[in-house]
Length: 267
Image (cartoon, rainbow, N blue to C red; front, side, top):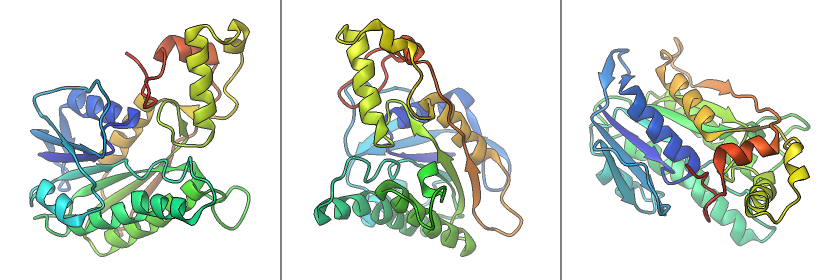
């Protein structure tokens, strides 16, 4: 069984790789548990320290290029964990060029991935890491650039499932600690680093996170659980929403240590 993970260099990507290796087998589209023989882990950049296993092959590249993805995936990819659209537009300002970058990293990449899936011998399972910001809690439309970007990706994947190009599952995740998947993650990351370095008062660690958050390892398990679910009877994409929770900041410091320059939690 061959699995592709986009955004593999992020905190979430590394957690997903560890979870797949620990699981050992995944269910193919026909429902049969199958050993994972090869994992292609692709990202634009990579952190200094990577999770290593004999089944993992790391690839660097700009995967909004469908030809790059098609060559990398070949014709025998069984499953895809598409994580790279998460956080698109999170740190962007008002200029139009920033919007172009957000669309490139989300909708353009997802469309190229969908095109590459056309060449597979069977429609691969595709698990998409979305965000709760794609929902509509306070208005008729997503209230952030990141939410709008992943909402468009969700619609594209729903259509891909309806046309039987893929078997998609969209998982809406909360703000992930260490993954820069929401605007508030930058401030929280800075606070964690200050606490670890002794630049912030220890009292700051007693407070709760200002927003509901999730941990990459927990999110990875939710993505694998979505992967293992049977295909919907109507062939349409399934949706899962993972709730976040308030966590004591000091507990995050103890669990993750000082974030690396890319925001990855330490061992």
